[in-house]
Amino acid sequence: MNTHRRSLRYRTAGFEYSEHEDLWACPEGQHLWLHGIGHHRRIARYRAKAHVCNACPLKERCTDSDDGREIVRPMDPWPHSEAGRFHRIIALTLVALAGLIASVALTRNHELVDLATLGALVVVAAAVGRLLFRDLRRHPSSFPESMSGFS
Picture 1 (tube, rainbow, N blue to C red):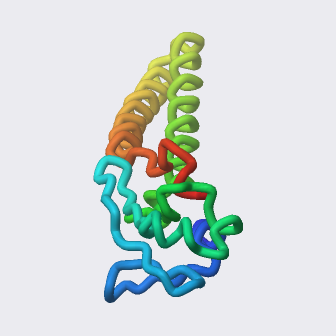
Picture 2: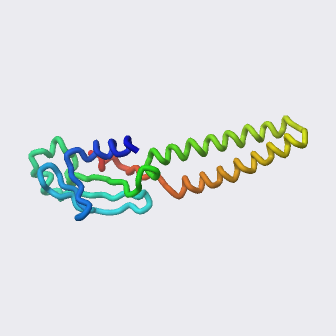
Picture 3: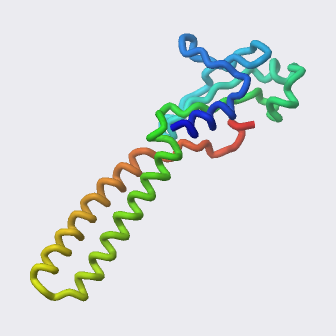
């Protein structure tokens, strides 16, 4: 969770967020207003007015965009961020691997107790894998398609 906050601070260094007004203020005191919400990716985009950024003496250190500085803020807390998605993928991979190992063991063991135990393990792995996969699809990546939000 600290890594996620640190990453967000890096992308917004020098900028202050006002939760009350739902805007960002740059080091020069200009505002970045809510420009749009990406509901599918669960991100909010804030943008400054282009003519203000283009006339700013700090523009070269702030952004290379002629459309104004943009800040992308995730709408979800850490568990639904990229790190949370990465951990869900690891969990799904481990459950799939456990199911595969149990399936291979099923073909090699022919005693009734072994078959029952391994069969139950395969069923549990399939059920848990299905839940993890559904959860992974329900929380899509929130990384912006263009890197312009991090300029």
